[in-house]
Amino acid sequence: MALDTTPVIGSAQGEAPGRPCFMQRMQFDGDDAYPTGGTLEFAETYLLTHLGVNATVMGVWGHGYTAGALTHFCRYDEATDALLCYVLAGTQVPNTTDLSGVSFDVVVAYR
Image (cartoon, rainbow, N blue to C red; front, side, top):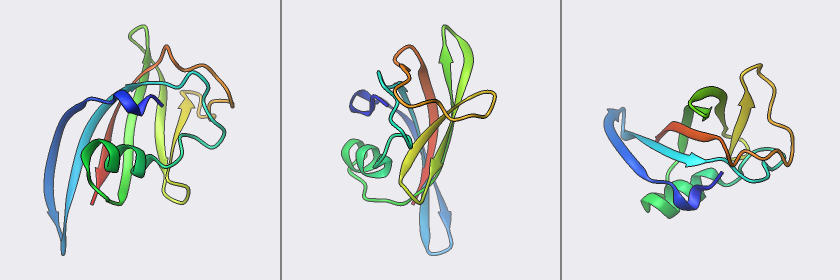
């Protein structure tokens, strides 16, 4: 995903036992060539680079839109620190698919 140009839209903070939790909304355009296994190092790339926070991602929820129509959804894989993209039918986007015309709008929960 084009995380280098990700705008910070808004955030919220809440309390959890022993550690605060945060939510951040972000918008970005898809990759020119979606990589196998999703966009790796999501926490490092987005949270550390864009927010200056070394944190643990608890989840990512959001959708992708093409010409205003809902076409994709995202899921975060904690094991690989990757943001995965799926078509609405439920299958992961194939390797090297051009997603540059897809606008993503997601919420990231982290602590």
